Length: 438
Image (cartoon, rainbow, N blue to C red; front, top):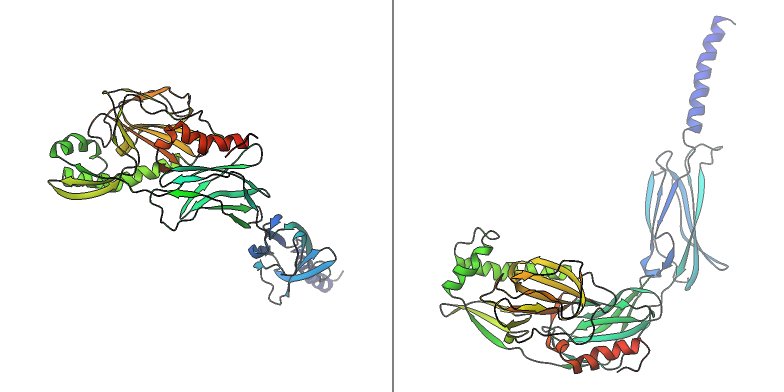
């Protein structure tokens, strides 16, 4: 071969190699992702489609909804500039009916392979279109409520639901599904609920449809006692040093008291709400709850307390439990059976024990000198959980006893009353078990 011919072959080979590289450089079809990718779907929620081809870029995309013999084109577009990706919301055609639905996503890129047509791919997604909200049927019949008190609902949902429970104003009380498939919802009509607050059952199905339901109820409204608490220098000197580390910049013991009462108190309440967030789906209690024996009531639930220093009002708070005073360091029995959630020091409550009784119901034993139980421990009704004391924000030896539903304090006296328990709680549990209820 002549030298001139060889010089012509080399560029030709390089040219062919470059052409082959250009032709074969992108042999991968675009990537398709759809959210959600299947299952129950509500028309109004729509979908989010993501298509990517970082190589040659996208050339065309078509999305078709198929239902029975009908087809609806949801998206159809071609591009000359070959974008590398597309993030496209998809709205379903209003003509689509509830039932099975298939979405076909087809796309191709701008690659010269194969034969100039680009890499093409398609993907099928299956859904169950559901635009009907779940139906909620209340099975329990009698719901006599007292402001700050408790109630129990038994109801049934027409389909599997989530985010299910009772809404009163901004407060939500979750329901718990029972082995029978029905739901129990323990709730409170809050002590501070507005007069126009209406309890409503709410539930969301798997497609995102929200169902609502009402029920018959009667509310006994009440007013709460006013109380005055005198704050002395002796009290400040005795009690406040334990909180100094949390508020080192407080100028005086009185300033420290106000910081504890106004800042630490709600922070401790928020911690209790968090601790109450995980509760047994089954009732753990048995029978009426026990009251601290041989103890005098020193403060009641819902008392509006005005704090006075040197005759002047300096603060106001609401007392959310019942204070019971007996002999110093008296044994404290568990009000009912349950599982210990917390047993430690907690700010204004001092040494305290929190017990889960199921369905979101908890009891709290505060200001203890000694704690005799551990978190995670199952305890029996009447088992000793500790001894009374004056730890935390307490002026003397006593038991601060609280009951809560979903972290919201409720009036404990109802749960001490066997007649109230029979009429308002046990009857619903018997109805769930297939026995006549109220």
